[in-house]
Image (cartoon, rainbow, N blue to C red; front, side, top):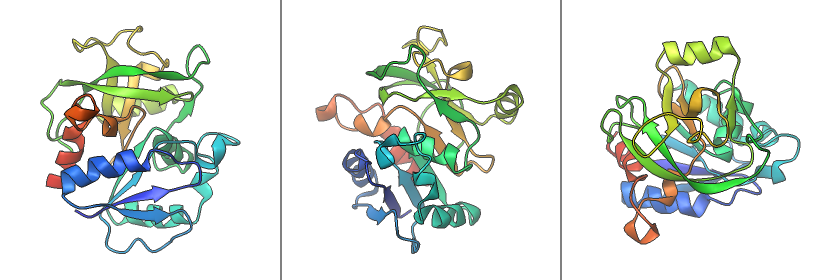
Length: 227
């Protein structure tokens, strides 16, 4: 699988993501500028975190209209993989590649802290290297990470088993205290119906090496490389 990272003005997590991908894939990912429309033979596109276009209007709203997003949609249509983390998740919802929206955090404050995520399914290219019910640590760094969708959409995500991760305690219990940004049903990450698109708010790419504080996030990237 050949990975690429999509760069928008204001994105600032691309180097962290590149380190995680290079460790897992054994080679550096291609950097794709937001004006490009030819994605070549890339298999995996990553939309990293940051503040695309300064988060003007709504987080991800301007990036969703960038020229590269037409190519991203075509990539998804032909069965390519897409990973959106933090601002990348916001962009995917604004582009209607994933349902719902990311609203201001509960309490209206930026959150910069570690959290724990419970893995809800392990039969996808993103989660295959975790055990069912596994819990892993990941850093949060967002002001608009409160996942929202209407009741019908939430019920569909639950019914079709498209919730990939939930905020939980270190022991795997879903509690209000563990869900610090107030996301509906403690949802931290969701999948597309074909299981080829994943969006999540916390940053697994920041925990892929013991020198960075741990390797909790590494299974996401090793699973994609194995796919």
